[in-house]
Image (cartoon, rainbow, N blue to C red; front, top):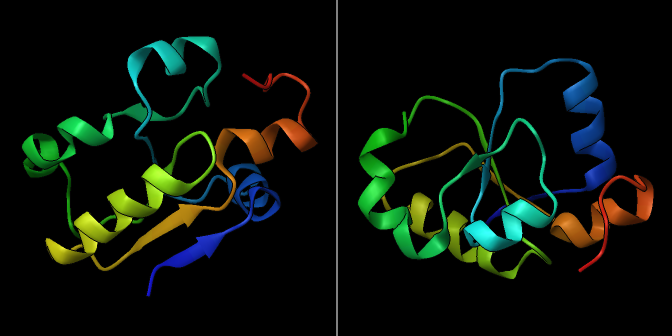
Length: 105
């Protein structure tokens, strides 16, 4: 089972400056349209080859456009021994509902 985190809860974590690594698994062209400034871009199709650059002891929140690709990424990470991963439920689309700087696409 993958932990789901709402965009509201993520906003609180950002405000509290918690040590969390946000990974954007969308494609580069999507990231250029709108993104979280703090997000590290690792597209889903390159995650497997970049997994060694991630520290299993860290806490990760994974996001995409709607939450489907990020859920797949969370499952991949879990299967590779990452225990502290969460899916940002609704992704950028959900964020656009609470923050106007996140435009819909």
